[in-house]
Length: 391
Image 1 (cartoon, rainbow, N blue to C red):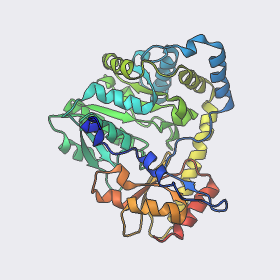
Image 2: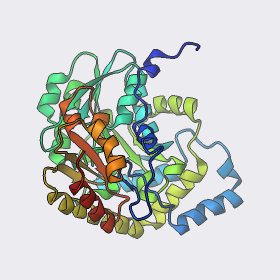
Image 3: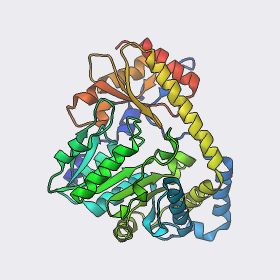
Image 4: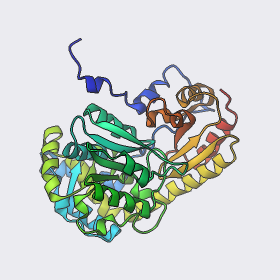
């Protein structure tokens, strides 16, 4: 075989794809179908109105099939700036917004503007595995910041991890994988720390539309010169079921956008026109529908909390948005447990080892349960299967 980039070769395999391979050769009878809590991406298509808007654009708008502006269509950038200014009671200009091929690409673009091989980025653990994968591919060191029992990271502990090569701290709230909603005061302390240290704070709010709290989740966009420290990320995929269209956003300074444009022009040139048209239509027409989606997800969260409260030995550490982080009661690591659960319980979940450094005992003792695609009867069935499961 010809040479392979050693950084890429050393990066772990995509966890969701790995978990799907566990299903090979396993049959699930109709009376006991698989309960898949491994991934929480929407499985239903967008609402019909949004699909019609995309279809109409595909048929009647020639520009929908052409390259667009590298930083995204201006009408969508303006809508994002207006939405975030209103929701966060701050000031965001369209020039401070870029549209990306999903939020993963927004993260990659942010990192590309900040760090190179040999630099370091602080990630709270458990981490979102795609963040870790991108850092590994770029030869950027990941500095783990272990969360406490409440699944919240500690700014004082983070301060002790900042070194001369540290370029950023990354927060995800509501969190993937734990579901934890970071208090506004905590997010503000991390901003202050990053500002003091002269590094960036990357704030991934992919799941902001399903935050259980009312009002702004933080005040960072109201702060003077917020864009000199904060890089905020967002995804349209979960809100409007646009996962296949890949539309995300990044909020940052105008100066940083010049660097983001270089990256995006190299890897995608421009984000899908049809996806951007769909995202804008969703923002303009689906506010009430999205509120209903949020209510449904929150009801599933409460059902999951109640269901696991009655499971002997299983201990829920946190829950929110699409996820809950669960400590399991068995004397074997979660990666082995997850494989056994497929065949013996008909449940596909991701082990905590996929979200933590190798050898971290937290990963071995925990599971991520993605409950967003499971209805209330399914959540009750999940709890029943786990109550009867013995590896």
